[in-house]
Length: 151
Length: 101
Length: 279
Image (cartoon, rainbow over all chains, first blue to last red; front, side):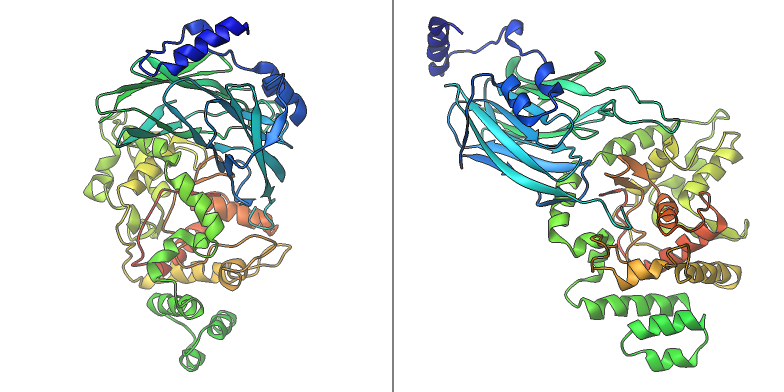
């Protein structure tokens, strides 16, 4: 991204009265390569190529300690960081670790709840990209049990 | 396939819950005869408020069947028009519009 | 029967002497004994809480259940079910013509003893009987539109209390058969329903927390995360039998209908809250 264009965008964002209409071409195409990556670090690199991940307590991840059923695991990703550009949830041991990504444009609070699939006990990583290109994350291990008799 | 939306306005914040009927078929499951069931899963879901894009979410096979999404939109008021649209891996799509009460 | 009495009486407090005298107990007595069993074991849990099954005993699991119930996928099935319910058969009649009160707010009465048919009739069975009576093909009991119709009818009964007239005569015989099935050892694993759902309700059995017998019929059909769709209680009966490596019976087999009748009689007076989500 050219510096001058970034500067223009910043000025546009700063003007709160400005009406922000995103042209269709700015809509991200589905991140095929990142979603098809089979390893966690590959997926992260494909999603945010220049990012160095930094742990932060300003990224929140709500997920159960022990998932009732790996097919439907309710999770929430949130952040108190300013200028959030995008957010993503990864499940390290899933066949495709990237589960979901959120690109924020206007008036969207940086917090999303959804239900994800987990194939087995795994680290769940919540990552947040800010407009300065930095990526912050937090992680939590979520256990997935295979039911004994009731399973 | 369908989409259900629940919206609650609290001050100028609209708390939104979406539920989409969709198989989110991963393409890894086999049917009873051992054949792979072809993949069919939502890839993009956009949210517009009064025709302005608020956010775009992208999903992969790691999102549960009958996807649920809950989020908050800021600076909202009664009468605002919200529009949701999803597109899946086979090119199918669906849209739904609601007006905040 | 003596085995049943000994087993159940051993679990009860305060009624052993009366039971030792009799060779049989009425459904009302069984119901009373079952409630006493759970309420003495868990004095802080009100009777009405039992409709949520194992979630009473596991707050972390309950939190996930409540998140899903905030906006459960079965809501679609109820809507689709309503449309199907109101769609006339080829002969112009509808499901409403087969049921009391047009099929609205009556799901909590099933399964019931059908005097004319001289057998126990569950709600899905009744739905197919209705179809056949009106020249339509019966629907499969699993993974079909039948579950959506069942979900809609269940939804119209939410909040009502489970009801059943006290069985006598042939109905009482069916009840007793169902009760006996519940307490009979089965399969390679040589287990009874009671081993998991009475003895181990509220305690871990290989990490599982079995739902207690009390309240187990209140919340069907269920959207199980495991099935990723709606299923009837008999789908669970079939799974349980497979899991203890016992003979699997087809849907709506007489044994399953009698078993469900027994369980239903145990829940009389509890709040009906179908459809519901489970793991």
